Length: 266
Length: 204
Image 1 (tube, helix red, strand yellow):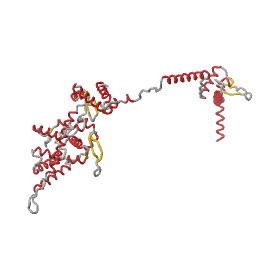
Image 2: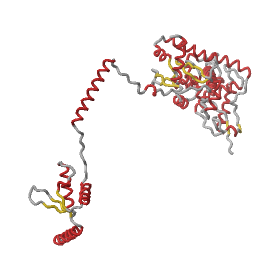
Image 3: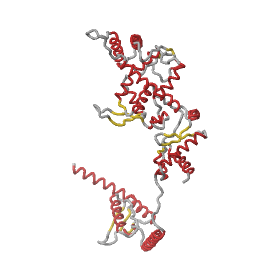
Image 4: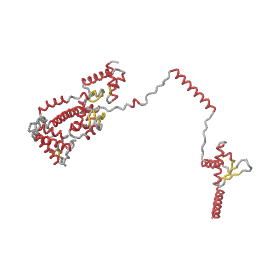
């Protein structure tokens, strides 16, 4: 367990001086400068002993005190030996001390007021945005305008329905070549035949269908799955499914020729 | 609008608003004379006090707010533990006293009255929004002038700067108290007080 050395601090040199004067029960208007200066220095020494940084302001006031003390020691005569009524050298200091004391009292009053008010609790500004945001929207029209607008709406709806009766919404079918190849394979299987005319492989008779079916067939030829025959130009194309033996034969042939081409190249 | 219903409406408005509700804003809501609304608020404030309610109405700079009564502070503290203690330091109070009574005032004047520099303290007070810059003097370097804020009035329970007691009155009051002559707590002495370690005092 550690102990802390505690010493009450003064808020500034004036605070200290006022304390010393009051503690010595001196009149502020008749400060015994010698005694007060002595005590003042004792305090500063004490602070230094405790290794506290003494604010320069404390030293400034120390210098002022010495200056006042010196002035008071000097004889108040001029060169001709006449007594000179000089202003009390303490006067300025006293004025400043009195002013400081006034505010010191005011700060004590504030401290008291603070204590009195410390136990009053307030609410912070309420978040009233939930009342201010999204205000209700009101239709700025009278009843006849509203009815007219509604009629226009009904008319539009009616027209739209008439149009819908005659036209159908069309959607483009999207099928990949892979999907179509699989479809054709299945088609041959379920039909139980080995040869079919091209037209039969199309789901619908349109350009998109023709194109995707044609490209799929080309893909299947490359893969040695089918063979095509067209007896005459513009005649129906016959698609013939190859048997697995035939397919293997062709694949082997294909590879052999590739090899020969490769060797030739080398 | 009857006076009674206006007071009731003001009560409702203050509840919704939370913060200080300026009389001007309230008057605009009613489209009524400023003075009329102000009188209603004063009357309502009086009623709250007479009925010893848990809530009170506080006036700050011609604005009103519902706050709790200090009599029931204990309960609030027990409800909201731990409550942040917001006590100002002695030096902060000194600077505030000078600003409050001398405003608008420069830092130089404050330093001269206190006999010590107040920059740090001033910074703290500005951060706490107890004082604010209110302009500049025409003197050399055009130093900044400081004044107190609405927060200051709230913190110390004054309804306006004019509400501050005269310093002469304070002195008189303190003189009477001096008869009892309590020992000054700021004795130059060294104390061994380990049990006080946690207290926010200046340690050496």
